[in-house]
Length: 218
Image (cartoon, rainbow, N blue to C red; front, side):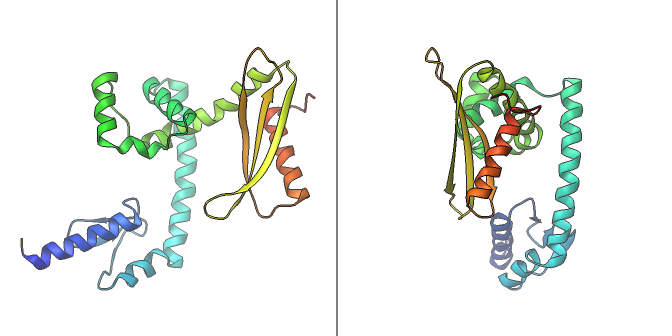
């Protein structure tokens, strides 16, 4: 392969890697935007950046995101009702989430080989778990927490902190005062526009509504 062609292919692949293969793709000759379904000019890097940050691109991306989200909810509900969700995938996703392990860790080749060899199961991609299983696990958690604290004396704590990108995050934890078992659960996490008594109080009330949808029991 001529050096010029190899250099161009490498440059195009670097753009795909930088901006994400869910946005861009390349055959080594041209760079395509999956969102806009058109070729992107790559003479200068700023042209790629300009396209990705353009109003039209962002508008189409938001529209596809909303459409995908709606379809995902319907598909997950349908699969769950028909029993098409893989129990292995569900358990794997639940284990990673419970252990605080990012799902993208599943892309690690050695981890994939380990799971294939010892679990004798086809290992799903992180995208599959995120799109098809994570929502189901999330929806099951409040019911699980309710069952653990039902009929017991409880404590609830809310704390606000700033995350790595500077957002204000209010997190509510609930636990039981039962000394025979240890159990505390992250009930709710909410991103706040600003932190004051009003926003913290509202976040706390949102947490209580999540724990007791039909009315506060304490």
